[in-house]
Length: 435
Image: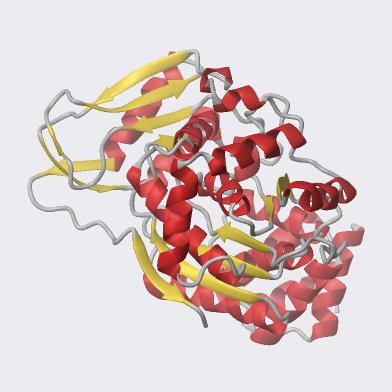
């Protein structure tokens, strides 16, 4: 079957056989299928989806396109966490060292920013010297030595996903349940984990903006995990407003450092502790979710998570002094205060629009291979439900130029709705899904 026929059949809602889909994907991997043909195929999948059999084939081809890591020499149950993507979501930077400090090995391979959402790799690379690109031998050795690694997905891990991930980012095909599920699970299955906790974002800043689709995504990934003998638990969390106050790579690292010191925004701490409890349960280090949450809070307050993060930074070539002096991180040339244009209650935030505004500032990528500005972003000081006065500072915009800062201020004004009445934000912690 020619590439044209594959694209057309999928576009029209037909089902591809395992052999047909494998041949198309293998052709793309070898270079006989062009980027524009794969982009058309991804758009077809975006609109009509994949059958269960097609999804199973896609996951298998992506998983087997590279190395499947064996971490059996690392004692304990290896548990990772993955977020489906949000604005201001820096949980991984706190969660991984926190859980590892409590005795659960955490092998965490992460990605770069996708669409309007930030990426853990881009954030950690703002730490001077920090190496996200570790070879698999280094990765295994670090897991054996300190029980935690925060790395970019190796070129040897699911290389087919690596290419599709970048293509989805710039072709408007991110918000597809089968494409999201296959991308996440192929990498997670390949990295050597025994169990996985999913943070599935819900709301206007998430790829899944309603709970029904978020549940469907969670159950799809749980089913993929079960088919490969991995335990997967999902938690729905709110993304109808940014998480924490900071949006942008260096700004989010600074906020994560505050959380590692036992402080930071309350919502960031709450989500981190809830996910840590899930990971500790899966790793056999907590008797209940309540016990896991209590252990996590203590580890944050006593500095155990901070000490483990220091180990990780040192192991990966970074400057651990950043944990004591975040001013070492990149700093923006321009800082512009955005003020409330009127008195009233913050009724809602268009979180996706705020994420897009951060991308326009340079905190994310609008095109394949674009460079980011690690210092760009926002520091928001208000949340939905807050009462504000006219002229009250609502955010500080961090930008490379005045023109970019002023454009971002216009974007924020359009994205933050102020008026009279009551705000109805989603519960920060939503449904727990175990399949």
